[in-house]
Length: 190
Ligand code: ADP
Ligand code: MG
Image (cartoon, rainbow, N blue to C red):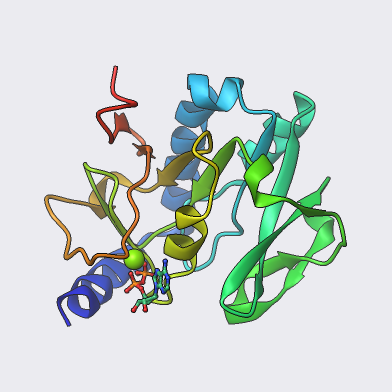
């Protein structure tokens, strides 16, 4: 119930963002991630297709591709996500929940993902997140390789002091906002 309220409040705030602000903040967030070691060293990345003013990822795709990295996007399959490699946004089409999904058949073993970029409704400094309430990323994160680095992207206003957390909620390694990159776990801090 508490999760439901926080989601509602945060989604309401995000809805107020105008297109120009969304674009500008998204650019700064992406630039911050591109400069981070975890992006530079990743050979295979998983991005997401933004909806409802989520932080954009198009610059990450363009830069990753220009650096020869492999980029995949998630597609809903049952209660899980399939990660499919793409070369351009033209290979995405509207899919589950109105999210653009890959249409190709270049399905990637999720264990091969070096950097998993995660959307969310709210985040805290410890890397916990609220999604839309379907638990897709919790399930995927719980079966990723130990070596996979997970990064949540959010606007500064989406950062909460603390979030209602349940047993199954998975922690991210980093959260990136327009003003900071937060290492969230003791083993990745410093
Ligand atoms: P979100 O993370 O999208 O905000 P929740 O954390 O509220 O959503 O999770 C929604 C539901 O997903 C949970 O009630 C739980 O049943 C299911 N879920 C999450 N992670 C797992 C998991 N690792 N295995 C099985 N079910 C899970
Ligand atoms: Mg969760």
